[in-house]
Length: 253
Image (cartoon, rainbow, N blue to C red; front, top):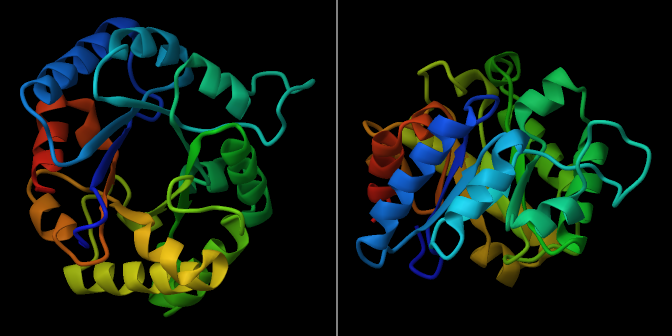
């Protein structure tokens, strides 16, 4: 990892957590971050029902708050959706867009993800744009083709390293316990950075943080987070236990 890119460890709680355990987990992380200055940024992305109480608990702390999705429109007749402006208003600094589970479960295209990323950036949020190939695409040797296409189709040209984070999450590795080899992860991350250079410029691409996600845990974090083009992790299951999540973050030192 480049010395100029500060690691970002983001926890995606997905559809997990009630108020009591969510606040307990949040307070545990606040205490760990407050112990001393840390060389990484810590971000938690709880479900929408927990954004308000978690935001209140995080007030004044060094832990950042993110959301798991946003609508492309700033307001309107979109029952059940939440706009990027609303997320900013409640205290979010980041929002995940284009997660593979959204792409699969809600049939989100690169065009839809691009629109959400634009909305996030316009609202003053940092968009965490997710890309990654399925197992079938990997087996067919199409990883580079798929990931390149997703980056080009999902990342707004107006983005810069402050408003954009990329998360590479091979779909076949999410929640399965499987992970690519370190060499494979580095190869894809380097490809993403090269593709970004053509999208937002070389200088911005060099400073943009690219996270790895897909069964990141305390056992494999040190190796993965130590790769030259890996600037942190988007952590799923391991983020639901404060100690495990902290162990992943600590591995980025």
